[in-house]
Length: 263
Image (cartoon, rainbow, N blue to C red; front, side):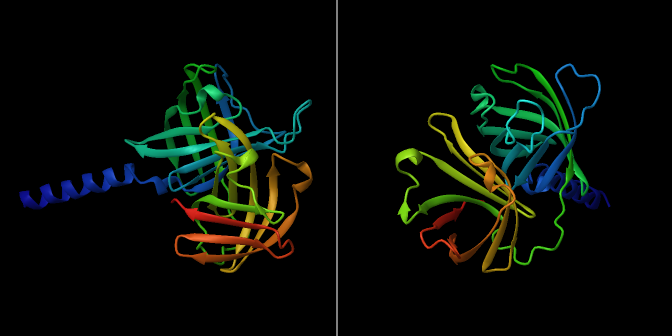
């Protein structure tokens, strides 16, 4: 009997440890509903803007957009990087953060809770601009209006080729030393271009999408480069080759993007 109890205890501890380190535990797309920062005593809500945070397999991105406050741009910014979970802590590394370049490269350890309805993160961030700064945010899980038809794109991918207007321009000129990461976490797709060497940010986009195994349909929800793209819908062909996929336009023959899977 004693051996059985010991064995059960060991299995329980192993299971708990595995759950602590499972980066997929918080996979999802979430819309912020309430927040408290700094010395705020009361919860506040995003009434005049949207804040979406996406987690997928150790990568995260957050978007501030549809900003209707006076003297603000409609696209207010995007941040992103990697994360891991350890001892019931959410540890976030920042790869790009246009509001505060001193935060790039730093790690933030926060408490978190997650369930089928939402996600909460709370604790302190530390940077030169925001030292020992209290953060507490509650998010509601975003659910697609229909089921995803094919899950093969789900995950995190990095661009290896970007041909626009018939010319491969990614990695040269403006995009020399650039990194482009895209997260597919249905129903949201998030992408960003940034420069690790200079800790600078070029731009980002947020979309809702559907994929049937061949045709990919995206609807633009937020776009830092050009507000005219917001609300537009486009279709693309997707072709897989091992651990990569190629995305080509159904209407623009000079458009081709290639990605390799990193998660």
